[in-house]
Length: 425
Ligand SMILES: C[S@@+](CC[C@H](N)C(=O)[O-])C[C@H]1O[C@@H](n2cnc3c(N)ncnc32)[C@H](O)[C@@H]1O
Image (tube, rainbow, N blue to C red; front, top):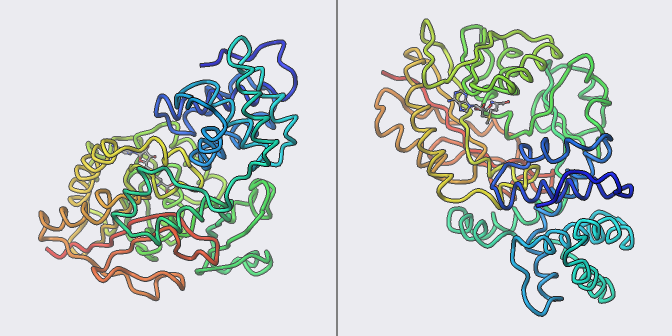
């Protein structure tokens, strides 16, 4: 869509050019935001520019329907969705209306992106909207397809909760290695469960007290629940699909002899770094979980399965635009194979915890209904209210579903499905 960095670019332009490439990757090629970022920002020398390109692209993805409504209100003929002029306008507008960039700087750094093309149109539409004192609504609008899918699955309050959740930056949740760590009380943050700390406006993670000593790791409260539901133990636990290792660290810190499996070498490198920083130990295996079998069945198996990731839309707003029903079906097929294979790794009387950070029932409730239907040797081990933070409740069927809008007054949480099952046969 746009070429590599130009040597004639004025300061500020390369970051916008990179944001354009990221948006092109996500919206036209269906790439994940994190995957598109690397190649799109490769030519940028400054970390600040890379962070700015990320911030602009993520905010455009959060506010896309609102930005497009504004653009459509100021053009006589609607611009095609994938027109470069539309993406350039989205970048200019989101900076001026949401990121606090002065309008003259927002447009000056974007016009070079459409040099030799619809420069006049972009300038004209932006000027019209600024003169008309265009504003973004306090509560963003979700893309139609997402709103109708989630309304059908969870009802209007969850859709409203999701819209509100993308209006404000999510808090930073930390899981502590030691639940008695004095930092928990000293930090001034909120603690929703033992060993959990919630901070707002925390700044760079690596500058926070305790990072270098590895006293904690970043983990949304909902993402910490699957391992919490396994609890403390001294037996053998297998963490399938483990990288970058948030749940492996929890299991190791809870006393388990843990084996962490993941198919991705690069993600396992992050898991090893995390274990080294936190001084925790686990056996690390690079393998396809579908092909791997343990030497002996384990006391606990955690499957945090690959999924559409629609539950983490606050930090990864690309999922709002690129996840289609076909992708959800493909992931559900993979999850079915993974959970069926994982079941054979559990000893009689042992636990199997299945989790996905997805808001799609096919990757949660329907998956576990199917699994239990074909596995009479497993039964739900119901989640108990006192295992959860205040404001969260188990489903009557014994599993846990977290939805947008839950814990809203405390800063919300990711969308997760978690089922704890016991091998009874
Ligand atoms: C949701 S992420 C895991 C997050 C991790 N459990 C944590 O808490 O940090 C899913 C992981 O599944 C891995 N994965 C996908 N397919 C796999 C397979 N067939 N075998 C093993 N790992 C797989 C991906 O590489 C990815 O790291």
